[in-house]
Image (tube, rainbow, N blue to C red; front, side, top):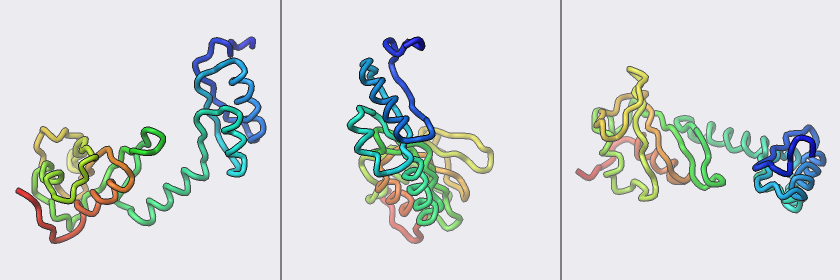
Length: 172
């Protein structure tokens, strides 16, 4: 109370034990804190976190697990940030030396018939100059460039295949 919990917009619980984080959540809920965030250590406590009114639960295990799977299955994809409870992500995809898009304008990527309609290309990070270019800059795609985009996890995978699968046909 001395810290002003009754005026708080949010509270974050990052304590060592799950039971302590749950107690912080219950205490914050009692004071009608609208946003309660907490770190989950052991998965079997997830339901207790939800019952305590914790609005956002973060699990290092789940995050690490997902990152390891992505790194093993698709080393060319780098997850930058999750948005909207993980429904959408910002990702960077490395352009391979064998990419069928080499030398072409970035716009050819979303002209591909397989490009997901819900995805948005943010731009191109040029490896040669370490500068970020928006799509309107009409930059050519070169090896080791990175395409930054916003898309669902599945759509990021599809776009990586478009970018780095040899011998593809493109709409013109």
